[in-house]
Length: 100
Length: 478
Image (tube, rainbow over all chains, first blue to last red):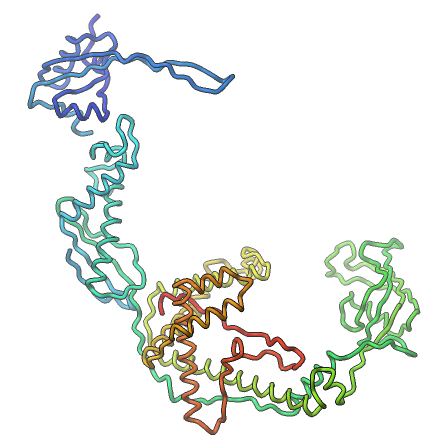
């Protein structure tokens, strides 16, 4: 299966941790659940015109969520998603994170 | 920080302040920190949000300076609060209140500038406040006035004695039983077993009391009467009703003889002459006291009319507000709703407030002028006098502990002090005039008696009613 670069990279992850890691050239993205490290590397290089040094991926598992009391009790799961932490070459930047 | 001041007319000053870039930056950083603590953004702990993120969350648009910017607003507010006080202190301005500034510029890295128009304590230019073109006028007490009081006393002492050998007349006190029928049927409120009636007092529907005239005790009468067209109960208005009336009791008022016994009955008086002498004395005291008050009021009017003050609008606005509150309190006392009052008097709130402007300006001017005269005359009020006044309030307003505790507070003390100071000022002016005009005779102020004015001239009434002057107004300007 061939995924387009824009299909691989879903959105940047913006959080305290991810913003902090940009200072060490590590950028975090939510990626397609079937994407592998090579696809992610190619996609980031294509989209942001940077050199990728390393890619770490992980899948955040679905978590059980409960709500309601007694009879109205229901149970559900959060969606699982795949996260990629991409290290790029020193001195390069991904502007997408800068403006925000 | 640089600043300049320019007078802007009507007792206001325009203050322009320029703030250096460093100070501006400090303030903005502080605001970012402050707002960051309060803003929640998913993925960030409060206070850990980078400024660009915070700006985006607050809707700040960097490319458009006119867009709302909560960070700048917050920084402006704090900068203004701190710097305006600093400037006022350095400029040594006695400002009455601080209004909203107008920001002329506010650019990060360049500094900021604002302008604000502030009302200052108005300068009072006193005109003549001595050498009045009028004098004190004491109303002379003549025998007719004494007689009038005596007549009142007789009326109070009158007894009701049964009427014998004649029918009811106007002025008699009757007790009647009556039953009214409309179309032959009794109606609600149309009958009573023992109804007290003062004949001729017009308490009943017109014509009813006239029908009772001439009846003797025990006699009955049946008559027709037409209710007035504007009678509140519509089922009766304009209707013809038949009444059966029985006169149960009939008494008339008998005034006591004008003799020494009357004097004894009224109080501890040996004879009529002693009573008359006492009444005359009290009337004279009252006349002198009234004259003194009237004279004092004229002096105030005179001094106020001769002085010039440019009163800033703010003070007038405040006074209008005070008067508005006073009206509301008065209405509440009488159990009238404010909305209802507006409807009945056919005014709206804006019109009412506009009507208050002129009297409000006059009141403010009076206060300012009196304070200024007090300054000019060097009139001071000692702490002891203030304490004494608080003590008096404590005994007088025992049922109103809130008021007493207000008087006891520093603000209340200040209020009492300035009120006392104004009162003393006027008293001083009056006394000085009296000293210069010995031919008028002594018109002493009755300081010992509560409120100054003795109310009743009727000796049997021990508790003199006190006509206390209304608490005047805002103490902050005095």
